[in-house]
Picture 1 (cartoon, rainbow, N blue to C red):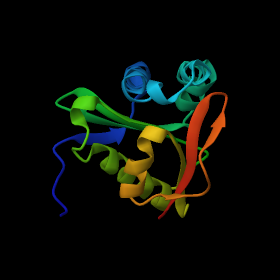
Picture 2: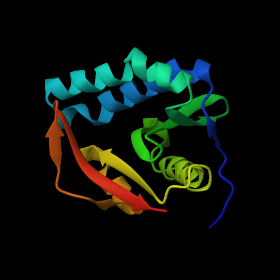
Picture 3: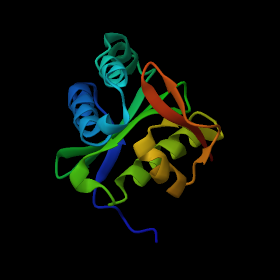
Length: 158
């Protein structure tokens, strides 16, 4: 079961920010927009293009890990407040290859060993709820909506 994954997963370099946000936007448009009102789509776009978020990343206060297949970015995960997954996206052609699970596991290992935290949280989109359940997250409450963003608060005990 502990097979070596053929993909590289590591912390992102500063010059990979735009590519990662591009992957997030492209994947969001492909899989999320049917569930969201226009307000939510705009809120998401505002979030990933926010210069303050980029500054936090540059200062090391907003961590991002990325997955690559032969030099091509195929997945990304971000962490805010030391334990909250704020973005997790995998290129459509790589869905169901274990990349999302591996990104969560690498981030969970970092959160536990380096930051001393005992859980991860996420506000899952409707599209992601089943995936998060399969990798061990549990709901913390019912589905909610804020600024057009529809989400279910969830946690994963480390």
